[in-house]
Image 1 (cartoon, rainbow, N blue to C red):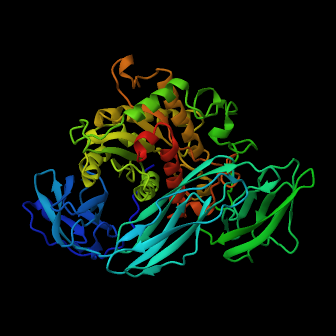
Image 2 (cartoon, rainbow, N blue to C red; image 1 turned 135 degrees about the vertical axis):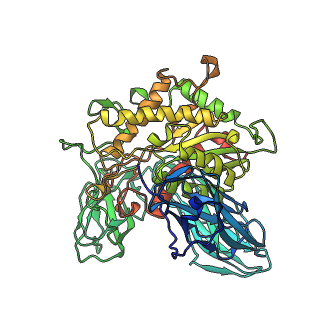
Image 3 (tube, rainbow, N blue to C red; image 1 turned 180 degrees about the vertical axis):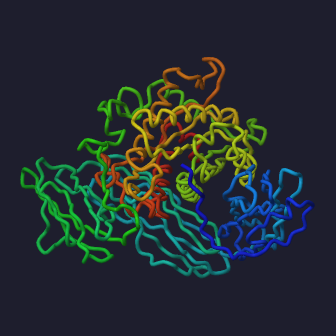
Length: 639
């Protein structure tokens, strides 16, 4: 996708007053010409600021590099090298401040041009030291096996300020929604010596294990958190399995939510409990489908009602629900699911399609309609994962070293992986040797990444890895979510080029990061809410991206197209390619595991995940995958 990185900080235009050694540099203006960041506590990061470079020369110029005279300033977005066209051409860079000491940092952003000259942009900031300390009396909750449709007894974590100055608890982020925090109204001022209790419960929606994290965000000290696990057990009597908070609806828009059961004997009949009503425009079918279009009279807010289910043996169960109604986003919120073109068949998630077909192509994440890695691929993935070890900057084993998980992709990946990094770094179960680097960038499409000399790879190597004090030889694994923004064509020809690009990107990963052994691929989420709003990768093309991933992985499994990853089979030219989390679902129609995408999960273009809801939705999928997959647990988790 040719997306621009999103800049969230507005700046005032000023003129550039810099010393430079040539007319080229003198004719490049930067807005703002200098910048003073607000005082920022050590361990936290200041709000990102965007700088715009304008070329007033009559000739184009190239920015060869962006660097900083103090390592506390780091590049957040923008690429090098990049050519700025003549007579008003522009490019953008965004910068953040991450102080590591309580002192002033009066430094420069150095813009180096291809004629050997440079401009220095003055940047200032002061690191602040807090004497508050956020201590948790629990860092791990293991909930007992819990019947689907019920809620556990409460567990409590106490946050105590063991320091000498006050601090504010500003946010609690908890994922997935099976875990619910309560008992704390935010923000909370915690004086020195005081403690605040946060209560947590677990409500499984299916008979399987759930892994999550609850993170605490403060105004003056780094975030911390609690790792959580729970196991759902099937109910014997009938129970409604859904979480009490149903997927969010959008004003004056179509909506649907399917109620599911655990236990009991089918068929099941659903009715509204006596005295309960749904928001105007919605109806409940006896099969448990809430559907309709919200009346224009329904305002934003949260609506409550109770639903009763009866099974074939007259067993009954009731559950109270809430439905949040949010304002229109600007996206196509009525496109709550998408049909296969020229048919009446809704798109089916690849992991639900199995041996079924989409326009003649078999489903499943792996060959033969399977969602399970083939035995040899799985064995190799587990072996490679278990062999990951700490490395020094030269890529040699070193118990005092680290290893890196690198995120790669375009702007959607940039947003999602950024949220994932925050979640993972606050999770006490993450291995302390693991450094996670967000290398995703706006515009970094697979087409752009097929060349190892691409500006996007250069920026990862010379800025993003440097920002984290790691090297290319310490990168051992990568996560990739990327697409060219396909918006036309006929399946399958519309994705075969993308498939080929994925295979080239895999080979590039091996070339640039010689110790990278596993590449985890994800495909896009639902994009039907962009149809008619954005021409960048609407449905069904967002869905079809998953086939490009599937076929690229399948080529490696079949020994096709020079993708060898095992030294025993010859020269290694690529990492092992496997699926990471697959999170496409057909809007509110959903898929068998209950995953849905609401219009509120997307921004107004229907293409990018909303901040923070949609971004956190993907981030949670990533965290759950890396905390539970057999190829990742040896190196992702602390042992």
